[in-house]
Image 1: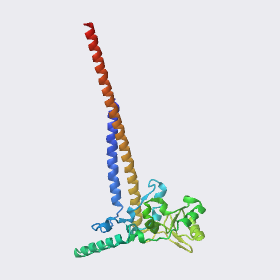
Image 2: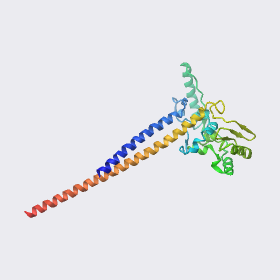
Image 3: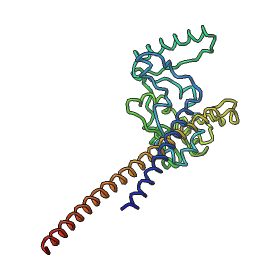
Image 4: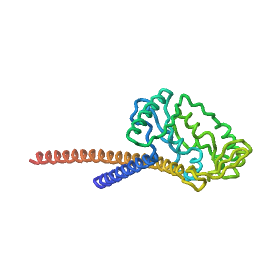
Length: 287
């Protein structure tokens, strides 16, 4: 029993170390997603406490899917940094409180001769985005499904209460596998479409590729890098969760082996005591 217990303890130690490393990596990846953007009036009251930037409102459904990585350039066109950093709040009252706190913060920065920052707020109770998803899904099915057309919003998990913000950010366009699919979606179904390389197609027009970073198809790449950071964030979070689960399983296995070892020790002790009593009785009888 000692050898299995030792192995279990070593496995537990390894799993705990792996979980700690995965947690650290997930924290670093989450921090990187901010991209240097200032938090939305973090020193404010309840209104600011309820605020989350849009990129904090969702996570990729399957960050390990290689196909998702191919869509990052398109996502940078659909939703660039100015949208990712929008402050999402529950209602107009929270938006008013957050805006008031932001103005106080900007006044303080001006007194300290620091640069000002902009704040864009989406109160969920005032958002009324047009839901094009039914027409978009019908068009996607007509073209052969997800292999040729993907709704950006389908790539994410998010709370149902946040759907207005997600539709506002991601519901206006679909992602096409190639320019041919993009052209057909635009011409035949009247959709706004972005291809994997960032080309935007609308009925009667075609725009060149753009990676969201400014300067045309070969410019900056800032928005695309933000999306890469978000994908890394969610992949690291999944890895951390898996490592935590492995550590929990190892701990349970070690505890079970400890329990069995204690039961075996008690049974061995009871057997030894019984043998001793038996020997004592035999010795007494022989006398």
